[in-house]
Length: 377
Image (tube, rainbow, N blue to C red):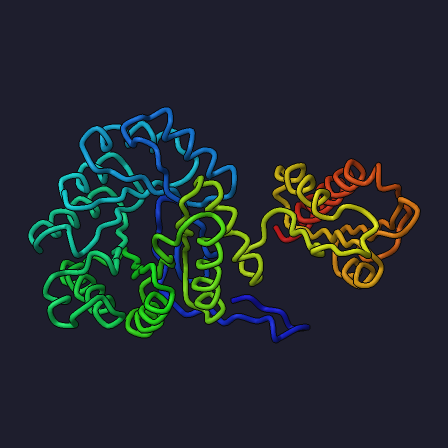
């Protein structure tokens, strides 16, 4: 739950779900909403795939998924899992034996699609392998690969068909006394996905993996995902998310965190509050923010920074941030620290000085947090 007693209109009451483990990462219950991405390298190429996993983890990914379409991929998984800083999910389609091999390789979770994994006997073999190797399962329902009997029943992919598919597969797992599973019901259509997820959230207490599948490129996919995932998360639905973009997996992680940060559900790194700029700006806001985003990528401490071009909204925004800069006149502006005016600064010195102030504030926050943790022990 996102709890703010001072501003209750910001509160989000998360749906109650049971908790499972994906490797060392808890999913569901009161665990933080985890952020996932997926590699797009040749899965059999250990070096390239592992490099992408590490880059995603450095960007903040809690879990990374890797497609396992063949034996070369499942053979590579053993080394990748051993070297990965985060749990690995094996993405399985059609070939149930790949799921068994992936579980034996030590992945934290198997993603299987009920529409194409095969009959119940094959699913049972996958369940046995997951149980024997302490591996959870994600039931991955997708509007584009629903079972034939459901398409015949409903005439086309729709929320009811997606939920029925998911519940049928849940029954198979539960009939085999397997309960370490989460579920997703993705569609590229925002309306269909949202309706399916809402119905699914009412029908099961399983942890829910949110995603708008095949959302598109960086800009269009970000917008579509923010609308679809943002509304569901605001309603309290969702325990782990993946933003699906035709872009670098690191970008998926960044967008996922920004969605969560905007709702107060996760906090990581510097939240930059900046104006769109106009004729009143006392400095080039757009170029300044672009430079600061790159210069501050290394900061993992949750904190806020306001960069506002003029004094109309600048002082008010700076009151709410850890560090702030408001444009003024004659080539200089005002620096704010902890919401208070601190000192004037020339525009020419601004970027280096702000980076320095943010780094100092991050160190102070980390020290305060460590002291509080020690006091609580």
